[in-house]
Image 1 (cartoon, helix red, strand yellow):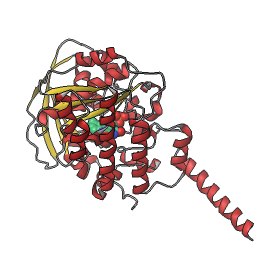
Image 2 (spheres, helix red, strand yellow; image 1 turned 90 degrees about the vertical axis):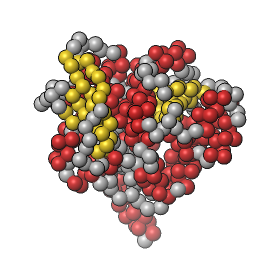
Image 3 (cartoon, protein in one colour; image 1 turned 45 degrees about the horizontal axis):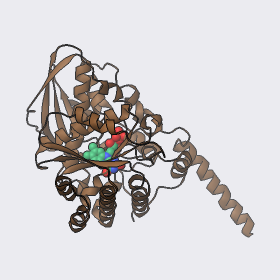
Image 4 (cartoon, rainbow, N blue to C red; image 1 turned 120 degrees about the vertical axis):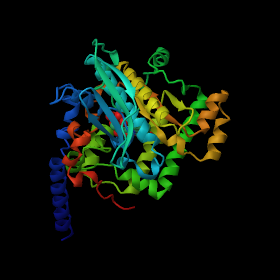
Length: 403
Ligand SMILES: Cc1cc2nc3c(=O)[nH]c(=O)nc-3n(C[C@H](O)[C@H](O)[C@H](O)COP(=O)(O)O)c2cc1C
């Protein structure tokens, strides 16, 4: 009797497993229309400037919320921050939104230069939609084609959360080269942390910042709302974080897709473990792009532009790069305490501060994992006049599993 019951449970579980294998496309990671923008990014659109948007939307952005919208004119593109896509309490002042828009702007400008446009920046017109915050306009004039080496890296770049490959380090010449791809904004400063003590201090801040976020149920739930665990949600919403983008081993990735989704608490615990034991423990170095005043929208946009340029360059050099925003959530007392371990006064001040994008570098080859791509919304859905084409169901994130 017991064995018969066990057999029935086994069969049912096996059946669910086989069903999930098919419905979640376990054997074909990062596939389907939600990933098409990575392949189609250089295709011409109906309007000449459309291909600039195709490049822009492949940029880094917080939680893959893609918090942007564009307005195409004949000789300009207006760029807006879509504040309805902010990650709740994790980014209350829209700092990450503005950095993300800066990343997209940088891709857009690289694509404009490649297409033979000279660009200049101007103020964007005000918006009648309260969720759309005007960031700036890109004025375009036909000129000489001038392709930066960074352009080729646009479809290859992705955030790499994986472990460092032993023996692969980050070449010191790359740090020098990062200095050469700087944009002109004098408000930005870049700090690298390579000594044992500084890396420990930085790592402690990242881990305690992660603990602080998951201890706050509001922040934890806001973050979980952007997790997409099923193929259906991935293709429907085309945004957010997926198992594929976590750079798991093939067997772990398959298990994650086969098993029922983690609860918010389980996902938080997993995040903390990965942060501490993989991302912090195996980092080759940490860095920070600091802005003088984080309430200055344009400084944050410039910081995003610089991060995007650095990430593109790192991609060309085979270095894995990942923002680690949790550092700025570490309790202030702890920040002050661990910062004593840095002997550099300016770096120490920045470590304790909250106004920067923090990053991790490691020596994994990031171009070798095409399955770790993020999903992208369709470029046409991101044009401002086209917003009515987005069904209202697509503007709301799915419900998250309770703790
Ligand atoms: C301002 C900002 C903050 C980010 N913070 C984190 C972070 O804390 N941890 C992380 O793994 N990725 C972080 N990212 C990376 C995004 O999650 C990633 O860019 C997004 O999911 C799109 O994926 P892609 O970069 O592979 O295209 C951040 C990106 C930006 C622009």
